[in-house]
Length: 309
Length: 179
Image 1 (tube, rainbow over the protein chains, first blue to last red):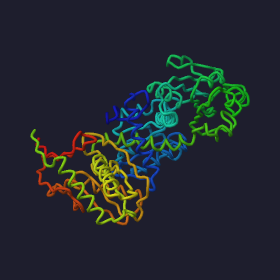
Image 2: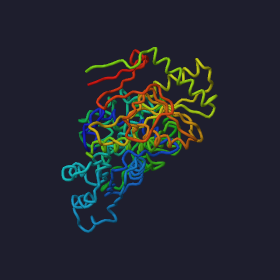
Image 3: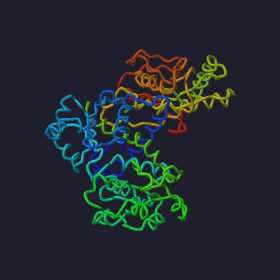
Image 4: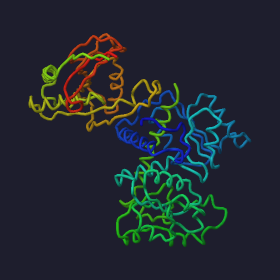
């Protein structure tokens, strides 16, 4: 197994466990590369990548751009806020215009679920989904699993709870797929209003009591409450959410075992986790960020190697 | 397929001792020298030479690393398969060091070209030399020659030279394989 089974990374749903294994093994090599005095390799010097961000992003965009540059790809950036999208151009027209400038790969974030799949059917380039609405965010899930593997040795058999706003989260869905593919047990935990109906059909445990969830798990992935996606009130107040679903040091210390805390960022300190938790040794939040570059380098390298010369 | 033995275990051993002695002749106590095995196959030769220098010739503090050149190769996307990487283990800087690249077979020279670029990620060496067990002369695509060579072989392009190591392949030997 030395090749991905897919030509695009549209979601974890389309990958198999060998793909994930290959991405992780390749990421191991890139992690060594980005810790060298000179952190750059020339593999992709004849590849051009367009980063199309139709929705705001800071860390994902930076992480992708850094990964691309460390592979020596040529990079062009595009944000919807400064573009012709506002003038009424369709997605396919926008992308085809960019591709006519000889672009080989597109990294796209888009507010609409399925935008990446749609694009992959209509344009001739490798597509990497960097988040499509509340659907999937595959590279985030890959770097989360990679970080668990790094911290705990493997993902298989581990108990992982995803806490918070599951309803509006693309990170949650991609994580559920990725963790299950690797043989982890997955639980979601949050207020009932923020848990999608029928989520148990995905084969995950559902829990509304945070303490019970934390006592069960090896790893807790704390999600941010996505206020910007909420059209109505899902809980009475931020203060009440924090009381019920916020993790603080006292709560962690009262558990039977030491669990690992993850967060995809950006953190709302004092809401889903307190500062003393975020900055503690139990948290691997900054490892996640570093691993994000290595994992994205692996994904881009493996997809680019399938683009015909 | 036919194959011919180019070197047997005894001949490989004699050549390794000669190469080790030539290294000592040029590098004295190895205080400013590092040995770099080129992944994947040069690693075995490098390990063997480092062991021989340490145990048989009592050279102390041999610095040994393994360099993977996958991400520096010039044939990315040119072949059918994805190029698979190997591990790089270089736990020192090569800044101002005398580097000796070690590989089993020197053929087109393209791997060494990649290695010359890859090593720059670890600093600017004082000088770089090349040691190779088998030198397939007349097959070069690039102007690269070894400083230390075990045996020169004249092989035509469709022939393959296979170096076996006891620790990996069960025996020390070199075969010329004709497909």
